[in-house]
Amino acid sequence: MKKALGLIVLSLILIITSYFLFVYYVPYSKGIRTGELIKISNKGVLVKTWEGEISQGMSGAQIFSFSVTDREAIDKLKKYQGSYVRLTYIERYRTFFWLGDTKYFVTEVAKDKSPH
Image 1 (cartoon, rainbow, N blue to C red):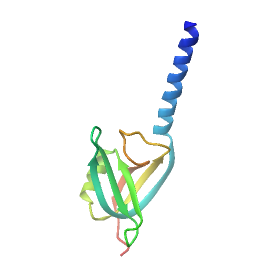
Image 2: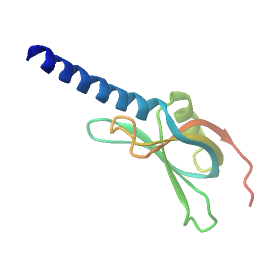
Image 3: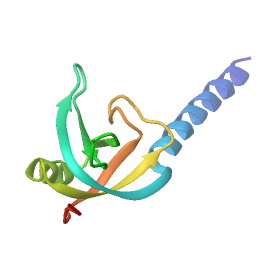
Image 4: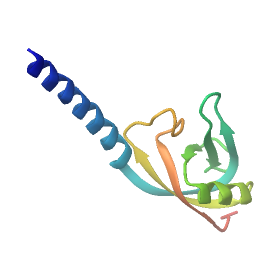
């Protein structure tokens, strides 16, 4: 009985660990988006995360929301506030509350020319 209970507990631990590792390390998609950086903020009550938005349309109707965990990317976003930027990002299947609010995580930031 103890052996069966031990195997069940071990199996549950392996399944939960595999799930977290899969969600964290396996991206659903990768991409690049450009737009005017309209917001970068550090938000949260217990766990602070960096969240941002870029406007991809002329009327501001198309907003792309993203999260940032990389310190270098956060510093560049602060510097480029209000500018036209190109963001390289990964999309995860799910997110964890301690990483950010969105499934989109910015990995690189570069200043870009505005098409206007």
